[in-house]
Length: 300
Image 1 (cartoon, one colour):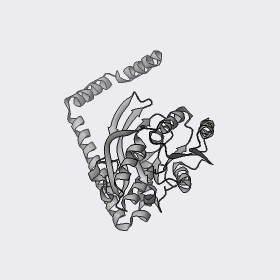
Image 2 (cartoon, rainbow, N blue to C red; image 1 turned 45 degrees about the vertical axis):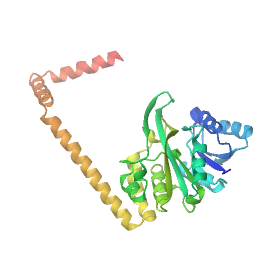
Image 3 (tube, rainbow, N blue to C red; image 1 turned 135 degrees about the vertical axis):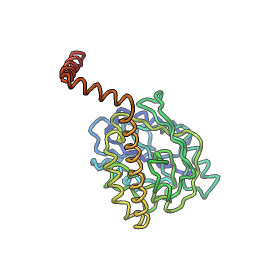
């Protein structure tokens, strides 16, 4: 049986960590190790990790200073003994059949390097389902991942189980706090791996107020990533990426300008401007603003 290494970076995730680890314990496939990397947590995450390590020897603990999720994943990759790797965040979940479904397909086809599945996004608790992310197999190639990431395709990192051999020579860039997974996918698909996409929901992504996607400046990191990519993907691909990004933002700006112009030409907008001018002439606008501010203050 193939050993699967599950890698979980942990930073202040005491609220959700037990549920995440229970989803690991609940796996129908039992030949796994779970490497938990504490990334300088200041809550009770370490206590939760220690409890699980004491109860089940498949759990392993690495303690680290707070250096970010990329460093944590890299530390675990260096110690992983598995034939396959599953990256999982400390607030997300996996279906009990997640690993067994992937391993079954790896065993049927030795040429497979990655098995993907559908991921369900939810808000805080599983009952609050938001939407599913289904991966389009046609877009799983280097060129489409380079040009259409975040536009036509996004890959939740725990939607995949990856053969460890494919990750040889690849690590997460520690200069990035977001978009680090995009760069890893690009480097993996530079190797032109054979992949399979299962039409099954086997991973679950939790959105909440303290999750990274809610707190990190994604635009800032996006542009930072673009600067770093040339080193890994070469000048020609980097130029192609930058041209596409410029075209993309130009079209988006043009579309927004068109929509704004349409609003300004609408009867509702013109009526509002007319009323505003009339109120200003009658010197009532300042009084209305003052009364509105007082009303909302009193309501609180």
